[in-house]
Amino acid sequence: MSDWDFLHDMHNEGYSAEQIADAAGCGYNPWDYKPPEGWEVIDLESEFKPSVEIDPVIAVIFENLVESAFTYHSVTGRYLQIWGELGELFAEVHLGIKRHKPYTQGSDGKIGNDFIEIKTISPEKTNDKVQVKRAGNFNKLLIVKISENFDFDVRLIARKELSKGDGKYARVSWATATKKDDAS
Image 1 (spheres, rainbow, N blue to C red):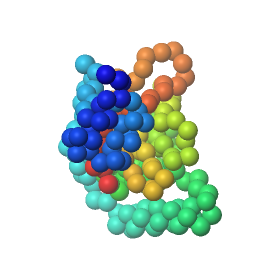
Image 2 (tube, rainbow, N blue to C red; image 1 turned 135 degrees about the vertical axis):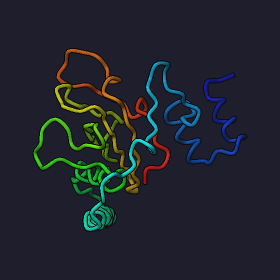
Image 3 (cartoon, rainbow, N blue to C red; image 1 turned 90 degrees about the horizontal axis):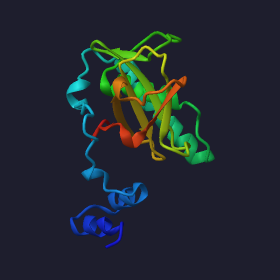
């Protein structure tokens, strides 16, 4: 039995070609993934219920920015370098995060009593890792991943789950953060 037999099993169980390709890319079936013992599983559905009224103008601006960035890439083959802002706007519009004023250091926003640091993975990035300053003032790290088709997905990791160390930065892999099934 080879290490890749699970791909045949996935096909037999009715998974789509895209899901099987994703599994082949990471070496395991991510839909069967169970977090390591001791990890806190956070339900993003209940965690991020917008408690503040979302400004409809900001929502329209977000949608227009995504459409403009997509169109620009379709026409030029280049990406607009607005990934961080798109990630933060997505979190504000779709997850109800109240963003801090510009240039506030330590975290990007707040939801409830939790300070949230937001990091974005763009389709240009060669790996699915982000790095965050250990000195930041945040309780949770929200990772927003934007696909080549400008689809958005999010994952969340509690600060206490970040790797321990003395370095200035902690590095987090997309695969190790809690999965959010449908963020958009």
